[in-house]
Image: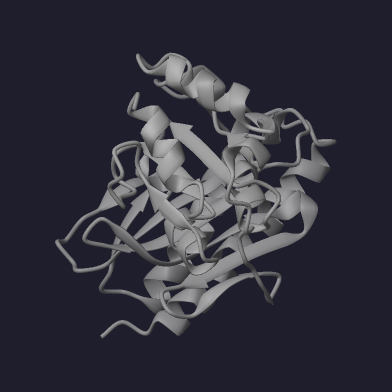
Length: 260
């Protein structure tokens, strides 16, 4: 049986180490990364991304040598293991390269399409979030709890990458959620999800992403008392979609997305 407390600790150490490395790059470049390359999907990558992933991968291989690995920058080590570590060394690289602060590492332990443990970091803000199934969710060691807001008219909506979301055929439903919430915000990337974790928003919606963009976020939301599904209501991180809420507004968000 997997030791989830150890998995949470190692994930926390991984994002912390990677964050410290990335932060050195960021500060040394005057918070404007200069070594930016463009990948085939038009997303940016820097030396910091690659070094951070190498740091995370080395730690995970040392602590969990029998587990599989899926990394945004180095691809997959797939041996058919029951457990896999899914890693985005710097989620929000574009913001990282332009002096933004809402970027950081994502490390998640996944089995059968669901997140079991993981951590995320916002190094420029000095924050680290961690969770494991049955062990709760924390920010810098302090317990996290989602909000108690139950009415959508009182809710704050946190949006993901808007260009992905509003290219969807169901973008009218997304606009309906934006315009009927009390407030809508778009911090993007992992910082958008952090708003729900900290009780500053009731829902976070993301689309057009990869499994490494979501791997630890499901367990963080669920252990903070919230609900995490895709647009169809399936509790998965594999569809490239995310609806993360405080649980109380989840049914309403899904009903609007479904056009009901």
